[in-house]
View: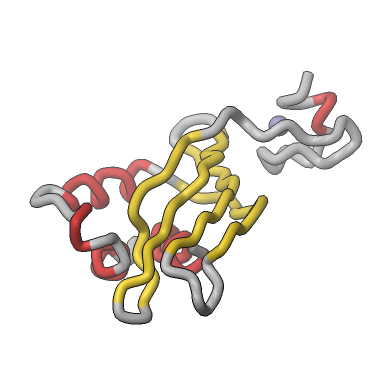
Length: 122
Ligand SMILES: [Zn+2]
């Protein structure tokens, strides 16, 4: 999961395709990923929760919140599903979740340096 985030930051499309589950690959993946990467600046990744995904599991779920910017900072809060095939983990798909709510006194997720309650939690 973290390595896929890094690959998004670095524009490593080959890695993103290689770690996508073979059944999920589409002919236009490369174009779509290029478009996303060119239009997006990634600002941070927080792993919220991990379910299964251990050594003896064949499936794993990672809930994460990534902050990205096209024009304004936004959250990508997603629960991703991974399958293990021949000992390697592949991204299958993900459910987009509502924006993560922070504690009022936490620093805002957008990186403004303000408290959440004075910024996006307002
Ligand atoms: Zn904010």
